[in-house]
Amino acid sequence: MPEGHTIHRLAARHRELFAGRRLAVASPQGRFAAGAARVDGRTLRDTEAYGKHLLHHYDGDLSVHVHLGLYGKFGDGEPPVPEPVGQVRMRVTTGAHWLDLRGPTACEVFDPVQCQQLRDRLGADPLRDDADPEAAGRRVRATTKPIFALLLDQSIVAGCGLIYANEVLFRAGLAPTTPGRLVAAEQWDEIWADLRALMKEGVARGRIDTVHTEHTPEAMRRAPRVDRHGGEVYVYRRPGQACLVCGTAVARGPLAGRNLYWCPVCQPSS
Image (tube, rainbow, N blue to C red; front, side, top):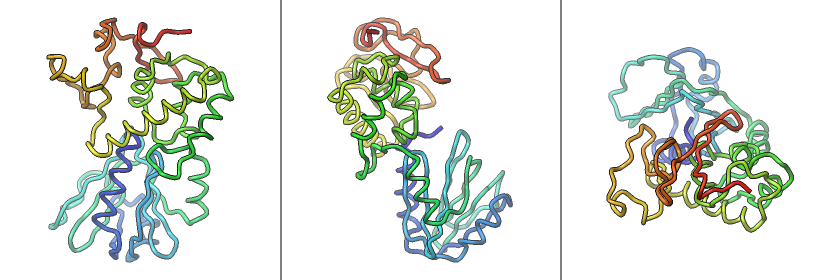
């Protein structure tokens, strides 16, 4: 599933291509036909990313809410507009660009109340300037759940996914199983600041890189990581490989229904 930096990149891309323009909106697949008809011919005012959710705000106080889920994907281009291939849930076109959406978990029309209800149920998004990290920290310290699971809880931290959760905890030297109540306020502030910086870099680069300069392939004279997710990381999807810091084999195990990766030496359990 795309992490939050990808959704913020999409919001910026769609704003650049379509904001301020009257759009033709259709559903070649048919599953979004009624929703498309409600916004077809309206002007896109702005786009918004919140965690892993994308909103297209149209005039008339209507918004299209998209959650890509595991299989959703956008594609765009310039005319000529291609014939729909596969299950195109939503197609947006102007005279200058087209945009196709395939396979999302959600594609629906919201009114302002529904948009606010979405924001209200999501936690702090590290990529938004209106985020409240202190509120997220208070929720973390109010529970004994593992910090790894809390980072993945979208009602606490919106947009943080599996890669960022694994990596930011390694960089903090914190065992992923550490209960939230044992994470000091100062420690949470450091985790939040690091997560925000990493995700902002992800927006800029279009990929997730989490290693410090001294641990890059060039600095360590090692081969670059080869993985479909791309990017240089410390522990994510590196089980059994040597930790880039101490050389210990990276461990893997299930937690909160997800794959957890950590270094037993750099992230010792308390």
